[in-house]
Length: 442
Image (cartoon, rainbow, N blue to C red; front, side, top):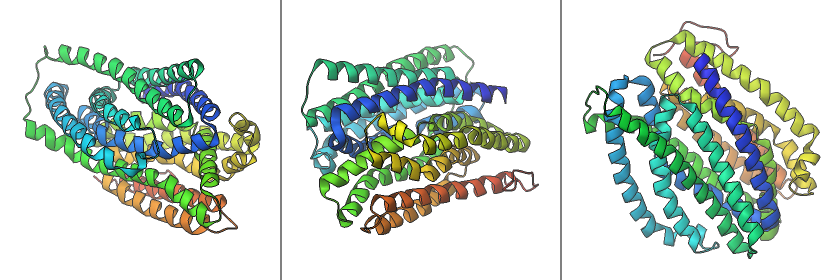
């Protein structure tokens, strides 16, 4: 438990600084791009995240689970095979991207170089994923914490420096924003992969157990495939969501420009502020996956139960005060970006989505650690379907507009959190009030 708390505190402290830097980055973007430019940037960013997920193949999770569950003498052989597999898959993905990206219409309204930035991003993410998974599994959270901090700091320095030195038209300004994001990933790659190679060479001198390539591939793919499917589903729906929102708003009577501007305020201002405290939830997620995986492998039921109670307590401790602050100081918080009453209203109305997502993120990590990835996927499909249906039906209604969109977003978050929570409680033999039952499901 002490290792767990130390890891969470270290990641949370670094993430707090990183998210503060991200906050400043979004302020710079809002000022430099304007409402319309910010809307375009936020519209393309889910597609960028989709490419990152495909490139990573969820190796951080599959490798971290392997490292946490298996004996140390098996780690070197696994990493050797995983590295070879990743290099081959990376080459294949780069070639595929060079063929496919020119025909993807979502990039047509952006600078032509944006496509090439996405190609460059693939090997950076793929190779960094190996190092990230290894350090997660070994619970060396300091390296992960500092890498996240370096990423945000590098992006801020590059972004502010370039915007201060040069003046760009809107299309080029969006390109620069995306280029600085890729540049920050390069910084993370250099730091993490160098640290990984140093430990990899040290492991060569140990008494290691040889594993076959097929054995390692099966073990990693058993986690990677369903987890990648889950993340891809979220990424695809997040990539579709901006266009669904803008289309629904157009049916409600908004012009194309007005719909894009309103989405920019929603995603670039209200959601950015509302999900700021989620750095704690993501810190919990990173530490929980190997911790729950190890406890599950050892059938340590008491640890699983006490860990869930502690995680829910930590989330409540920061989640409820955060939401209260959003409700009381929405005007002042959104004024940091735009003097817009709409953004403040959106921040207030989205509080259920923020609060339930804070609980949702560590619960998803719990399901992954328990091996219930398929359950998490099915439940995500149900909640997203409900959310999208409500966003379309209510968002396209002239009397609701963006308020209808927000109702749909809130409903999806609430449903998914409750489904995940009930599933975790059932799996580890604890009732919904966090008191023990003796029916742990192995």
